[in-house]
Length: 335
Image 1: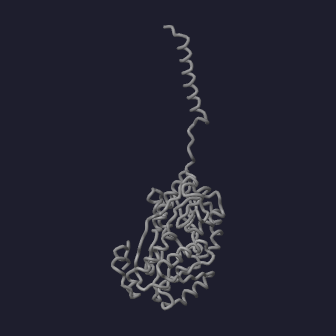
Image 2: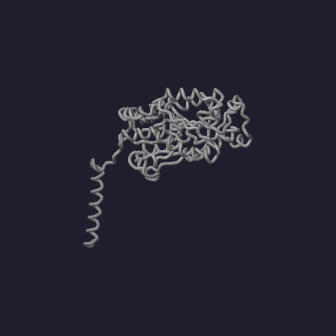
Image 3: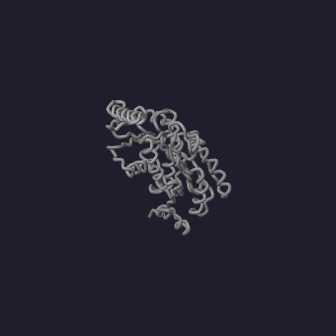
């Protein structure tokens, strides 16, 4: 059988294509490239100004476990905490970088700022940050930029509501002490929000700016029930202010915090974000980074899960009869 010239050309081209494909597959350039198997777990460095692991860190760990990561085999979390010393955060962040962590989990706005100051290479995932754009941590929620992303919350926006809830469960609440770190920019924003809310609610906000841990201890130890009707704790753990506020509860002063973590330890009530859930949300972002996505390409998420917790045992010790409506609205009642 005779073939036309056109047919012979097409057959020859087909043979050449097949031969080229075979040659490419056999060459080192055509072989499928496999990423080297990881021989050590991912190192996640948690950074905060607390006294140890926080609900956010616990949520991060549990979130990674839920995603299929095996602790010790696929990931390890190391926590560096500065016990209320904000000035020590940059040094702690530098140490995490020196330790070769794969991701920094910055637990709080001050920790996020410190991490951002010391590295532009190591990915940073933050949580417990109320205004990441205003603080200069990110460009926008959709496009955070650089090496950072995370989980924001509504702490600032919830400040007025927290004060209103406090008034609801403490009859006759008129003078409320708000102690805060004098050098903390976020605390200054808190003061501005609370000042406006207090004026609207007919509450006298007693502002107390503190500069050292010794000053904080002495100032809060000297507060007595006749001076104020309650104490509203700040978010920041700097100077151990929340710890000293908690001690005031034992002296008969009602206290309001932003989270159930402190209510479990003896505060009267807490209203705000569920920070354990913030950690769980952050785990998903960490997973995206560990599987190759750049932090700048991961939109910042917002934790809108709120928790209202009342410690009935503390209320009884303070002689408070919590209104039925408040009990119905509470997510948790600690007996």
